[in-house]
Structure formats: C-alpha cells, structure tokens
Length: 115
Length: 116
Image (tube, rainbow over all chains, first blue to last red; front, side):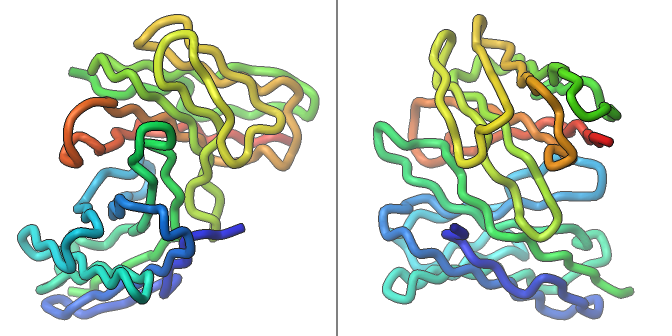
C-alpha cells in the first residue's frame, strides 16, 4: 500500500527554469514531511522539511508548499541548475512518541537539468 | 565524523546463501534503521531500532533479521537469500530527542546486493 504518491516519475528542465515535484499522502497522522536528494551511487540526503503547522518553507532556491486540506505537498526548485540533476524523494512520518522516525517514501522523481 | 558507514559496497550472492550487511554510525544516535531501494518504489523500511537491545519490524521485514547490541552498530542479516532481495540497501540513523530540526535521518552510502 503506497501511502505517499509522487509525480512526475521524471522531469526535464532547462537551466534557469522552475522544477516542480508533487506528492500526495493518505495518512492524516503524518506530521513531518521531508524531501531527500540522491545523487547516483550515494545515499539520500535531507534537502528541506516541513511540519503541517506552516503552508510554505523556503531555503535558498528550494521551497516546500504544503496543503493540509488537500493532503498534498510539493517541492519547487527555482533557477534550476545542472548540479540539481538528481533523484528527489518526498517522504512522510509520524513524529509522536511511539511512531517517530518511520519514513514512508514516495516513488522518486529523476530530475535532469539541461545546460 | 565518518557519519554512517556501510560495508560491503557491492555483494553478489547465490540463492540460499546467507550474509550480513554491516552498518555503523559515530554520531551517538539512538535510532537506526534499514531501508531497501527498488526502482519505482522509493525506499521501504525493513527494520528499525530505537536503542541498544530494542528492534522492531518495518514495512518489509520478511527474510531479514537484525540485532542491536551497541549504540554504534546495526547489522542486517539475510537468512537465505532470494532473487527478490536483489536491491540497494541503505542504513540510516537519527537522534531521538529535540525539536523537528533534529528529525533528520542520515543515510549511509548503500550496499548494492545481487542475488542470482
């Protein structure tokens, strides 16, 4: 049962463009939503994360938009660069006292930024 | 700080063989976990541990065994390898205290396992 659905599967963007990746979740108990970036041959690394008490979080060129009522969140990469070419995973977890840390991942999006 | 380390990087097994994937972290993290990554399926949780002597099952635990005798180490054992266990395996760790800024999980570089 896939509780976090991610789209698109792959994305090609020109340098300087905006990359947008979307995720939808089912479990309303999720309260922590991170995005991970993974380069070939490496482990995933945390890029940015959001809690449901805010609708948007920005860190440099990366922004998470969160819509609690629609159970959706998205990653926006502004001014996309070739160095941003990687696989991106959204994830969700419940950070209460008993269930913390168990990340449910989306299927992943392969982003290619052409120079 | 080496962070999270995993050995081996690559492994080929024959069906029915057993092996142990090693994972160690030097950040004094209480929480450690194992994920497997398969194309089109993201990462799925196999087993996790909230501290030495405490382990529990994740989403896909069948065919895998874990133990946690120290804070630093969390090995994953394949009891009798099957082709369906061909995957990339990642170990991760995080702290269990603090605010949401401490929820970050640190992943190792992965072990690519092929079972023939």
